[in-house]
Image (tube, rainbow, N blue to C red):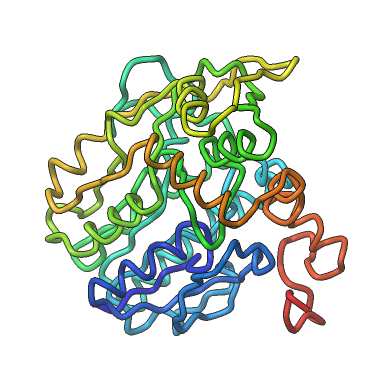
Length: 348
């Protein structure tokens, strides 16, 4: 198959693309590359990639593809706080427009990178794909709106699928430190503290970015009738943790570390335990392999190899919001998150 991956230069995209290539698919990327300066180590995929904001995609960009895998967007809640309107502009409206253009271009499958953030403030009971959606942030709300609006496009010629990813973790060439397991291991490695900014009580499902990528591959290769207009929680039901339990895993992984809570640590209103059995039941070729313990060990080894410092991971290079603000301060990026017209390369 010929597959277009939007966000191919992002945290998940840089892991997904090589997996698709190894499976024998022809892959092209599309990414505005806001985080070119954020590369961690090496290993960036070498593929044809269209450097374009997802809001500027045209129908001709999509012709000839069998599948569009849509990962591009503002990646988390703090970025939503930068400008809530931009979150809806990019994550919701541009995603629906992309699906509409893909259908017009004759693309048969559209796989959307959604989120378990859709469940938002939930009870401590397990929730499956039929459960109530209760997003509490602009990021989560934007994902719910995309699922709702893209479903209207589903028909005999166009099959959308919605992958509600659990909270991601793992090492990537475009590493993020604003994800709970990545962040806790970084704190433990650089300071000796497993540092909590909340009270650690909320439940959260977590999933390695390789297992997210395996889900995209499994959906792309599945028979159409199994995935047409379907929602899948991506992860493993056994990989739901209270945040403080992840702290214990990190403490056991990083020698000499200890747990500490911020003086103003309070509960996080985002709380959900997610049942992920459906995807393995419907798609038996989807076999996630990672656990939080193994993931913490991978992160710790990568941080040791790189020699990551507290200033690096808490600074503006790797923190998405701080990095965007630096690009604006350097007069490279406009307030609407488009590159300024005088910018030929943001790495300059």
